[in-house]
Amino acid sequence: MSDIEIARNAKLKDIREIAKNMGLEEEEIESYGKYKAKVTEEVFKRLENKENGKLILVTAINPTPLGEGKTTMSIGLADGLRKIGKKSILALREPSLGPVFGIKGGATGGGYVQVAPMEDINLHFTGDIHAITSSNNLLSAMIDNHIFHGNELGFKKVLWKRCVDLNDRQLRKITCGQSKEKGITEREDGFDITVASEIMAILCLSKDIKDLRKRIGNIIVGYNEKDEPIKASDLKAEGSLTVLLKDAINPNLVQTLENTPAIIHGGPFANIAHGCNSIRATKLGLKLGEYCVTEAGFGADLGAEKFLDIKCRETGIKPSAVVCVATLRALKYHGGASKEEVQKENTQALEKGMHNLLRHIDNIKNKFGLNVIVAINKFVTDTENEIEFLQNKLREHDINMSLVEAWAKGGEGARDLAEKIVKLCEEKENFKYTYDLDEKIDEKIRKVAKNIYGAEDVEFDESAMESIKQIEKLGFGNLPVCIAKTQYSFSDDAKNLECKEPFNIHVREIILKAGAGFIVAITGKIMTMPGLPKVPAAENIDIDEKGNIEGIF
Image 1 (spheres, rainbow, N blue to C red):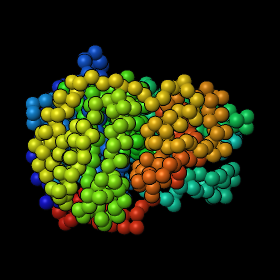
Image 2: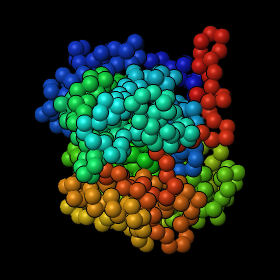
Image 3: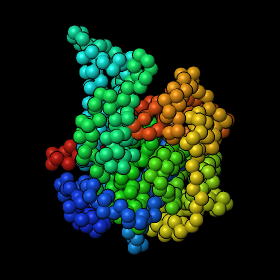
């Protein structure tokens, strides 16, 4: 059966029952139909002083274009923990319509480990991302309206971009205001994908609606003739933008196919943003569960680094254990095998690709000081010979591991991983960040590039260095850095999969996200508005005569 057929045949429980079983009170949820709900602010006040459970972070090696199953692994682990009698709660990101209709497809797991209702979650869900889009674009409208009515604030340069939650490369750079109406100012503009918007980052890092409003007010939208920043609060925009987000800030509650509670909220990309669900979702999972399983996007060089250096620093939380997902196809891919060859047995490429996994393990264990286990995500095409080869290699390096068959067997297929995670969470850790906040911006970027990516050095474009000087002059030099980089390689070159030769990281642009509270470094050819592939997933998505959606995977 296809993923969507498996999901339709699952026996889901009423979301009110899921909420009650996880410890929520009736007045603390707002139902969105039978299987979805919003969790309201009241629960955060009630649980404020409750002790946290254990946090488990799921990350991965550098992926292939189709991804390596972090979401599937996260869901399987949460279900597996329930299988061994532990109270687990899942905290995941919301899918973006860009990948759903692009190359990766949906982001609700697969096989017998999915969150449901999968069609709703992958499409409009509870409307959070649409609210973020509207909030972002209202700010754009207010900027241009202000300029039209006399430009009292003296905009010389507008930084703020419009956004849409679709992959559309044609919108990366546009000219707006071409109607030729009297008073309309024509200017260059552009679109980001919504999940790269600063509003998304702000929503995910806000403690509550008061904090959300403050952060929105701090957004720097442009500069005046004196090169002084103009903020959203100068336009008196923070109130109306917050109103559009008043429901979106509340976490969404759904369930897995095995009825494990799943809190799905916020969805910034990890290669162009900070790549993890909202702090409110994670905190809620920690308060209500013995174990909260969460994920960080793409490989550990991107998602995990940002989760640890940005999100953990912001919240004061830290993982008790880290799961690093590895697949045979990704290891072969990073060992030089082509996209076609990764489906065939190839222990030579597998061995060469081990360097990718070992660097991620070294980073997690020795650079961040955390307990880690490798979860081998078993695919039906994997051969016993290759699996045994990988297991032996991991034993040679004394690395904890578990062979996981959750896709085919549900939570039962992750039982071994669950049992090992419980033990791993009891071991001591020595968590540390990659850099100190009071270091210079360029030095923070260098530390990530050298210590986490393995780069020789960092090369900054002249304009990037000018931006760094300006940001430090404005007093924002003590913010964490969020490096926008390809997910396919430790380097900033998506084609440099093996990273056999020494490489540098090239920073071409530095962007201050004063509202979100971090500084973005754009490297290589990374774009904040992705494009569709030659054959997008959208071509295979349809609806049948009975109203059932087809083609989402």
